Image 1 (cartoon, protein in one colour):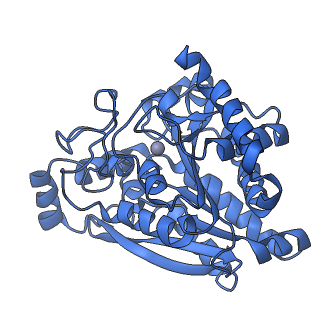
Image 2 (cartoon, helix red, strand yellow; image 1 turned 120 degrees about the vertical axis):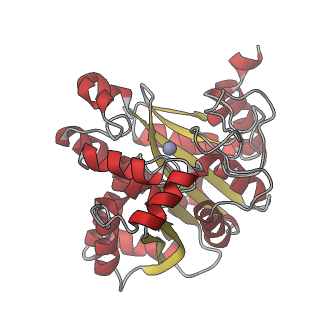
Length: 369
Ligand SMILES: [Zn+2]
């Protein structure tokens, strides 16, 4: 996107309420700004092309500066309500477009493979795939991390961390004029966050086995896969399952370079949606949410001029680097296969106990010493 457009959108849509109101009333609908954005149009094209194969739903609408965007889900595969499932999520933070692009690429490839790939067809007979890849379309249109109310959706759940969180970044209730705003205490969740939780609860977490992969990008040196908890350093109940998943992932991609760890190893935060969804999932089910965090410092190091663009802080700018990131749909298909093959690896009994010990040794022993 052209930087001047982003500045205009920011000025128009993320300034304090009174100015926002002025723009909304006096200048609506700010017709000099585009009506849509590339990822949203790409998604609509894919949904159009895949309308026979995908079950498509608009789960909520989000408005910004006179524009209205639907938040879509598309699902495909087994209609058995007990079939294992995997959900792919992206665009919760409007600035982090690369996550949505990654899932868009996977969807596109999936549709193309459906025409010839017998293995994929068989796989989809026994598992379900759910896509919700632009959760915050208004934020993506306006090139802001938060939604149009200034709320950081990934801080919008009600729970608080049980220890100190980083100032601001851990989530704050001071005001929408500061980043990482959680929303007002006691108020209903933002429509986008509530829609995501409905999708997770209605289509994933009530199944005996499900995985969620939520794609983000941030200011890190390396790429990471994080899992609960973000609110506490306590162990998630499904640590043995997560440990097996990590081991399988590493053996499938020996040079992957991802840091696979609990989110709490980096920092704690209030209001994380995946913590909230995980805690609400029935304990007899195995629901494994993961956040893929693509580190942007390597892109910035190789192209420091990116530092001067808000988009460049969170996304690769050079085409060849974007292409390299987008080659990662393998990560999506690896986890899909894991869901398909769950009978072969889900640990039980003694083995599960042993794996719990291995997981503790791996992730927690140094920290406890
Ligand atoms: Zn993010």
